[in-house]
Length: 223
Image (cartoon, rainbow, N blue to C red; front, side, top):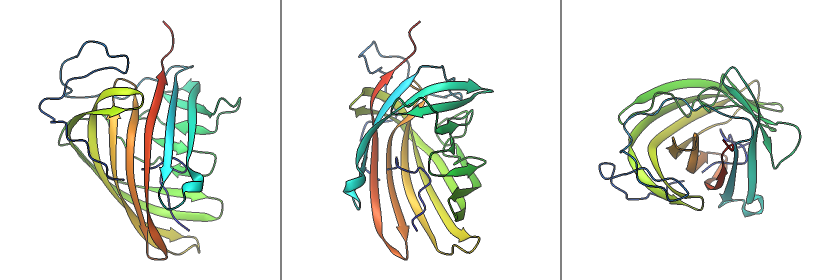
């Protein structure tokens, strides 16, 4: 069984060549440029914020989809998200915006993709346990913020921190198996989320798969 640290929305190496030293912040609405990114603090989530994403999986295109996530509640910095405008929240983010729970699995303590404050050159190495049904795996993640890039998405242009990551995982509790991934995430402080993910997953028992996720719209809370 393939381990996927971000079930049903993951992603793989499409690189956008904007220079980190020339990057200027620009919102999806095309507002005036801001000062270049130097550091980002943890996001603050608000009830009613809504993001939409597209998901593309090269190995399993039948799973390609578009979906939305809306903040249903906030408690101690943790945000519960409702998917596709359902009344019940099925996704839980920690105070750093990392996954703790989805409809298909859980991460203990989280998937540790983000660690704040973010700045170019920052590194971290952390471990977590992923559980989905009877599947359990131990995952070790290494990450580095390699630069600042302006990228274009369907939701607009964003200044982002580009984060290169790698994981290795091994099945536990009788599941067996092992594998790893290489990931690139682009985190946009303007919307408090990863707005693009490129992901390559490799297991000795299955063909490698590449996945691409991109934010297609963002709706902030009205003032």
